[in-house]
Length: 49
Length: 566
Image 1 (tube, one colour):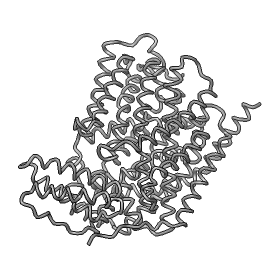
Image 2 (spheres, each protein chain N blue to C red; image 1 turned 180 degrees about the vertical axis):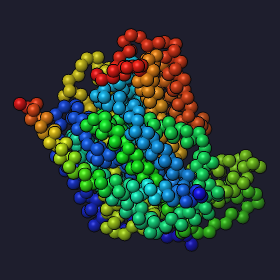
Image 3 (cartoon, rainbow over the protein chains, first blue to last red; image 1 turned 90 degrees about the vertical axis):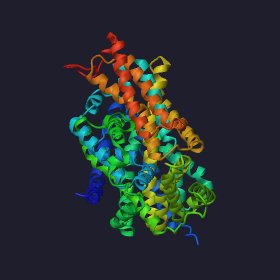
């Protein structure tokens, strides 16, 4: 296998996976942020009471 | 006739897109301030971070304009060989993610900073020393971010270079505002939004490079203009460099404060491990994608290059002198106006002449060094000049929005990381009494402001001794080598002592600093590996000579069945 082919494959994997995972993060992140806020709000209320 | 200057098409529309993205991020950052009650909320988001948001936060912090700039520069000067660092990062992330090496045990201890572990294991002196060195190295590391990033923005947006200082100040003030007020909660939320912007910008730029230059164009540029280099990392960069990168990336992924803070912020150790596996592939892209931009810029500017002939002089040395003098007159202006198609062939010719001649005339080595330095300077600005030349109005605004998002999240993450070390591990322990959570919160915020002032000044006065990639890695290595050794030794070796840790920090840091002293002429891999070797030697010798006292056998002391929970 030539270096050119090896680096092309590496770049293809890097770019493809980066794009795919970024898409997943963009979609799933919203739910997680809502959960984080709920947890912090609950913690705040618990401390206040 | 010289090639035309590049004029950025950055328009009012682009400016509006970038400004709106910034305002949205600032608004979100300030809104979450109400959730901050304690120092734990501020520094580790009350340890409630999920997998995807954690991955976004980690990547946003570790990707800024500076990352794109130095990775592109590395690709420009080293070709495809530079990709090896991306593969190393992936390997290390997968290893840490699969095994939980170091991160699992640190996360279980519920600490806020890495030096806090040192106090539990070795005593307060080691904590303060580690904290001081981390703050020093971290501040030096952060210190070149603004000037390099402002240069990118000046090129891409067309802001005149005389306003570089103001551009830097604007960037820093925005990052400062919501970091100082919102802390980690603010960071996690804004990092998520910023990640979406930066990922979109990254994909757009990569597609633009592939459309304009194409993979075959990049291959052709490396084959035609790198003198046989640019393919084989072992031949081009050396085994020593690769070994050093492996060690450094293990340290960066386990005990680098901004990364460790994300580990400490996760819901539990399982989420922490998964986060590393997921981000391994993102880190691969973080390295390789901007390197591809750098190689694209190499191909792009060689495509615009004008032919250059060696000056008509009697000897090779005289030719080099004339060429160097000619470059002295035009080089700076060419960089500022994007006429890299004129500068690059001249620098290339000077380097070739010097390489051919240096065996016969040792004085030629001076010209080779000067040409390499100039090639590095071209490499730093080539990618932004290419973007200014190939991206149309509207798309440019989106890309700048993505870059600004990346940059501000990095500042914010690093501000929080280093200021927490200064406040928690240097000032608070030296105060000699228990500080209230409220006071420590105030102290951390004040430190963020002080740090901003420092890096603004450092950025204006310091000249880089070589490629930005090397400077950043060496300033990180300054404390990373001894930190990882002292953590691993503390966790897994019962005989590890405070004396060993102290010696490790002193020797490891001193060896790294040798690279920053140009008179010593130590190459980056030698300085890096020397630092690791001396840090290990100091740790082992110090620990054997002065064994740990009873008080040092605290949580995290190595050995069979040792319980590490605090």
